[in-house]
Image (cartoon, rainbow, N blue to C red; front, side, top):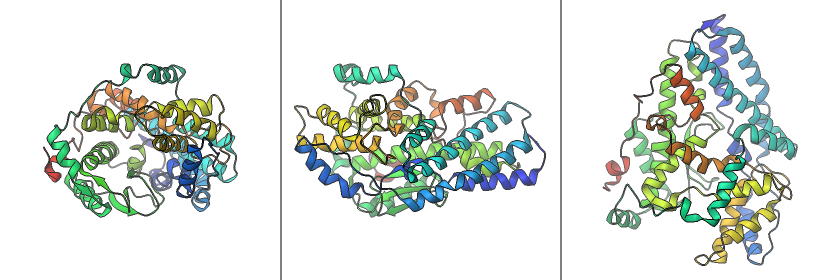
Length: 418
């Protein structure tokens, strides 16, 4: 890379990384009042009434995110002006960096739109970040309703036998136990940048590269309890897939950018908000451990289609989700729970849930799973990037065959289960 002004590039790179790593669209779009709504909504659903809930959001966090876009544009402009690529790898770096900048700007805009209750513009920003399922993909998801055996075979765990599963299921872990074991797994792999934290505000265990303070965290809800089998799946999904992919990608960019003013951007370049491949690789781990039960659901795509293409509001989509999950082997209570789960995830970011709106991220679990199954195994080691970005680096001459952190067997090493 040719640099007009190395100091200007170094400063802009440092500030851009710090700023963009604070913008997480999922965090911004998660309503803050789901606990207040859930029980009453599900009770209504059991009486065949499917209301449109009123979501509330963290306006302080949204306000902070909304003002970051101008800074990001400024830093990116400085880098563009001062950097001229000399080879294919330089070109690939700038292309991936531009992807990150566009997503960060869309996320900042999204925060502003939610604050102003401009759902039409929020929808545009969400589609810029996550895209939308294709017509053929939607058709296949509907076909799975009619012919489930064609899509879901009788896959059993490839990782554990019945005795190991029984032994794991008997073990029970509360939040502090999960925190302690996750911390040991992070140490086992040598992931020093990551901190496992107990959190009272979240409901799901989640690895987050991008956080409000800019530091990566593995979040554990403070009241979460799991059995050993679920814990094994979480280790494979969150740490051995998500965090390992991020750490390998960070190391890759640190090596490429060593001794250059772009080095601070390694952490930003490593993580895409387009998480289709990222979630797909993690889903492969889930299925290897749990079998068919862990297969990503086609219901997310159907819910997105109903909301986005047929302009159905929350209640209309939820009614369909309830009907689809009311089967001979399920209760109405479980159908209401599933309907709430699918629909409230699809309507994240909406301020008016009575009309069509879709937070489209969740179709990526199934599409990403299918993509990851057909991708070279070496790509899985860098799953925090998109598949196209990994191919771009490989075609530019970057060696992907020696990841810093190859997959190991933390469950066997730390839980003693074979």
